[in-house]
Amino acid sequence: MAERCAVIGIGQTNFKKRRDDVSIAGLLREAIDRALADAELSLKDIDAVVIGKAPDAFEGIVMPELFLAAAIGATGKPLLRVHTAGSVGGSTFIVGAHHVITGIHGTVLAVSWEKQSEGNAQWGLAGGRSGGIGAGGAFAPWMRAYIYESGAPEYIGWMVAVKDRRNAAKNPYAHLKMPDLTLEQVKESPMLWDPIRFQESCPSSDGACAVILTNEAGARRAPRKPAWIHALSVRSELGQFPGRNPVRPQAGVECAHDVYRQAGITDPRSQIDMAELYVPFSWYEPMWLEGHDIAGPGEGWKMVDSGDTDLGGSFPVNPSGGVLSTNAIGASGMVRFAEAALQVRGLAGEHQVDNVRTALAQAYGGAAQYFAMGVLRDQPPN
Image (cartoon, rainbow, N blue to C red; front, side, top):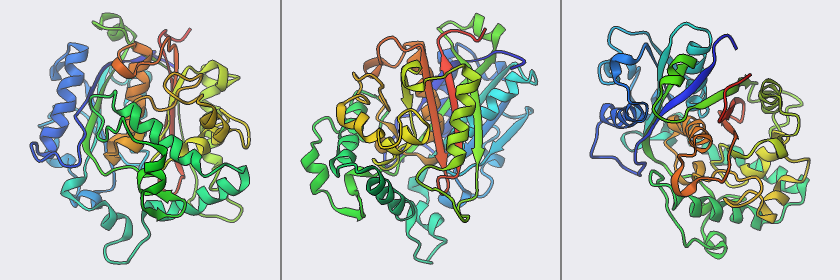
């Protein structure tokens, strides 16, 4: 990396099913103002702005960056929009960081959002009235394939749902807070797309997330501990092609290996202290543990079963409650990076994992074909 880069400001909105109290511009400012307050900066300190959201069809607003420029402090400054489907929040974080790493800008604001209540994501996914199967319908056969190949018991998906919703109860910004959810309640919830039950699915949320990224000089001036970026990577592949393995997409494997190489990680299971993984449906937790070589083949579900991925476990996954508890689509990937940064800064509050020095952030999108990943640490790179 040409320039060291760190996260010095993080802002999240309160995520809810409907945020009727604010406009889209107001939603973004809520996150931006909190990030600026964390960094003790103002908009005049920002050199460039990078934004990201899900496809325009989800909110029914084409090119929202045109009317949002003034509200997000981008007037007269470089403004770039990123779009990589569900992984867009992660990709937006990475593009913002690259502005700093390459030395183009000193301090960059990256913000992503979704106000799903003002649109219809299902309409956007399904192409209007074409009767599409939605994201769950697309992913369900791959989850069934994972269960068949790994021999995982059915209750593993229920365990992930209970864990993440209980974790979310400790996160003041999370949408679904269900501290008393039980395995039985998940089991008895309606089946949506076999094997996915209602309680194993992400909600539809309104919300935004913003981060302030800066160079080493900016990080040294920051009022609070920075989160240092040690590795960033994006990979993509076609959603369909002969021989594709959608349970373990090769793009995801290569993206993970790239960030491990950059960060000097040879054994991710022992060298990473916690992970924020993009898990919109419960079975994706064990699938990504194996898909990113944190666990061996058929071992991901055993990490869930043994409690290793619990908040107090040996490899906590999604202590924030994850996408299963909060899903403003465009923001969800950036929240993974922001929560990983909070963990290495020691500022995650009630859902803080003890002694986090190295954290992994991951987002994916489309037909499990776009990946954005990063490794953050509490100390700068050598």
